Image (cartoon, rainbow, N blue to C red; front, side, top):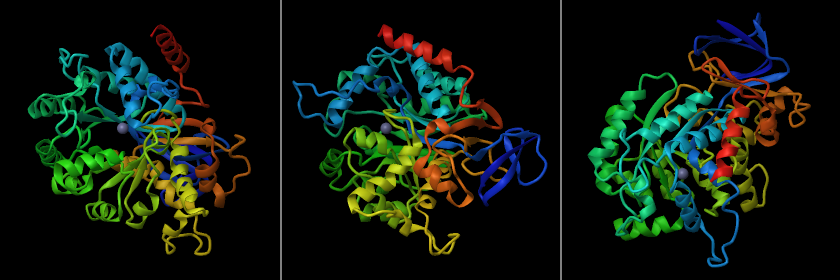
Length: 461
Ligand SMILES: [Zn+2]
């Protein structure tokens, strides 16, 4: 048993000054005041961040797609997708291990303790399976464990190029030819890792473009029996809405609802182009949404539909997605900021604060609306027992340095707002996963080696 003291502890029950978190094995057993073994100093202890949507390998694309090709002067999501496909072309298993480790290391140093890895590069470049068809999934999981992160591997189903569209060559790495093949692969992966305390496996039909109706219906049925989570890209681009109308004569959210995909263990990724009726369906089925604002801005997807989601009280989590930045603090901030730009107003999401639960009915804090998106909603979306500091939960927590310039002058009442609106990732000091420190004083023990290996790999590409 270990007792950690900090200047502040943001517990589920409220913020405690001079708080003590008691950890036994990998769980929190007590939070309160009193005696302690280790003084973490002038820091705040808070739940570790949950990155609910990641494609680790896309870390290799950072800075390499930010140009205009004079032959294609109209760059959009789809031209980025071509570059992303090119990047996967020559990836070998060792390359994937190394790039994934780089992405996960960066996540850990910014305060992320759990990642939902939406994994779709499964096979060899021509589509042939590896000797173990889950070779690449194992590599990604092992990379997360090498860094020390908790991971839910969201095993992607990908079957077609789109409605009435053939596959293109570069999609062969993603594709399962039969549903049975996909299901067996996913079951084998779950069987292999299911008992590991830091690993879980979920289902991830890629999108309604890439997965036909009969597969979606089956995934809904199987996941409900096994009580595994489902994540799916939905409504990121307007083009998807048009394809949905062509194939199903209705929008993607209605299609997913009718196929049984929506539900309290399901998370839609993006949901950029949804309307009020769509959000009402999500609310009725207790479906969550993962927003990826830095990626959505980078790819020109569209604005975060914050009012639409909050009006219906749809649970929101966040993801670093394309890894153009790995900064979930920035992602949650953007949920509010994008709406401010659209409305030309301030504190627009504060109107959704439950005034009866607020400390002050006169001061409705915007940060209170955004706070669960950083950790507890993501933990629920990934089926992980973390995201809140309360007895019984996993001891996944971080410390933020109150002497860092971005946090100086913090007092109890402003603490969560300073974190949401002002903290820099460099203020993240220690990261504990299952009670074990993987980052101490801002450094991971393997940091230099992981960065050097990655740098060497990139130079040689
Ligand atoms: Zn994605």
